[in-house]
Image 1: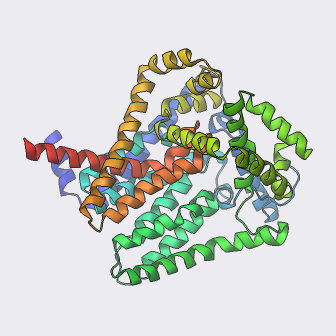
Image 2 (image 1 turned 180 degrees about the horizontal axis):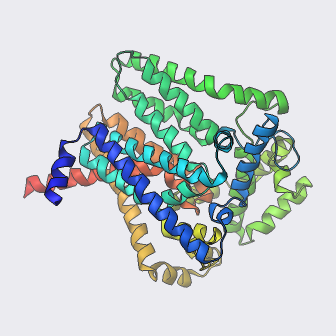
Image 3 (image 1 turned 90 degrees about the horizontal axis):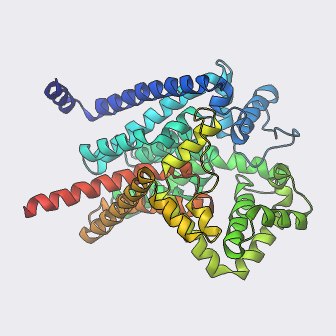
Length: 462
């Protein structure tokens, strides 16, 4: 039986293999979804809680979707004013679903997005490395519990990943109409930006993938120009909307608020030992506003930037080291910890995870407790070590690729830079390793390729 399945798999085309992987993902996720819902129901959780309908982010997305359907405008869910913090991509997707289906069906669509992402990871692995590398990376991504969680909850990751990976795949796809892949890649990345603005900052790295496919470089530059034109065509109308209504030509008020509300208070807690909640309260008192929804608007962006600059300019080296340290935690954070917490919040896991982990113990000066806590949980420790090995493998492959100076080294370098870019952009809020999901396909691909490279070298020596 096993031999028959192996033979059948070998005879399949890459397209059909991707379809098989996507189908396997759908089946697995549906089984897990119904199992989790059965467990949650036994704990007394209703469907809305298990979906996270009433959690802050999800509730806002749903409210924005309903506002789109009822008024045709993108309005704040609290007071009906124009919304600037969220971008319209995910609420628009929810609104399209709500036209026909109830909220409970959202996970089924998101599972399809994840299945597409799995197929695209396999396709990327096959294109740049080998079928084995693509298969390993796709399976690792599929089995990550945080990827599963994001497929079931009302969060942006699954839609974002389908669009983002679609752009990365499209830009390197050969076509008789040479310009068409660049155009498609730009449009897809533009849509991804409207789901999560972070995609805008990594667009140059996606564009640089062209140098792995197009020769001479002058043609690659022309393709990049078309890519950025398509990207601008999708995103600029939303930026223009924000400018006409608020005077800020930008995608969102998110960046300024996040640095003010999260990054700087967490840094000050690390530096001074004062709880970040107290530091945040002190900042808010200087502004004269303590409501988070109000602070997220453009109205207070200038004063938030001023407070942020004051702290960062006073301690530039300390903050840089702090940011890099937290970015490093992004790469080795535990999916087990994050998933356990999210399942508890959704009413599926009855056990409330400990309120403080090793990081919190370090902030409190409990270094011995942090050491014992880290070594005392074998599954989480092993997981963190495996993430570290994966990152070191990705770094090793990047160095080897540069040393050999092959054209595909361009893609490897871009992929490695994407991993680190997501880490740095996440920075101080890396405790929620759900934010690592966009980097995982590239981390798994490079790590799997590094393993294949090392194994090949060992076999030659033996």
